[in-house]
Image (cartoon, rainbow, N blue to C red; front, side):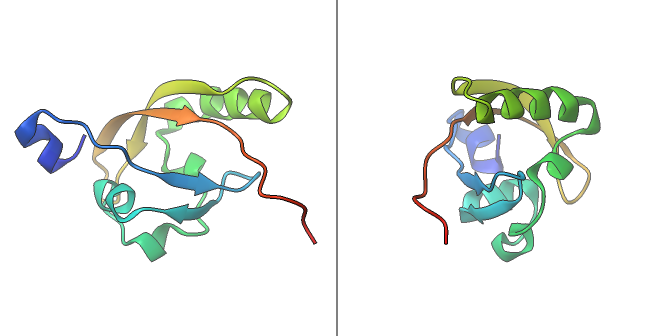
Amino acid sequence: MDRAGKRTGARRLLSCLTDDDFRIVDADEDYAAVLGYKRDGLIGRSVLMLTHPDDREVNQQRADALKDGGTPFSITKRYVGADDRILWVTNHISLFNAGPRG
């Protein structure tokens, strides 16, 4: 998945948190680096816009189903990196309650 992972055969856990509209509100440095961005350059971006165009619809449908009461899921999909590289990832998607708004 990343350069270090290719050398060692290991996979790394990358972390990204989005809001209800799929905009990134937090991401770790490794997530940003794999995509070729600085962390601050990802905040506010739609994770769907980083997703390969052919994978966006199914990603959106599954995420919408989760928001409507579905169960957490995993999806193997492609991201498009900052340099237009295609990156295959497996995302594990779940919801959590951040508490009351307001």
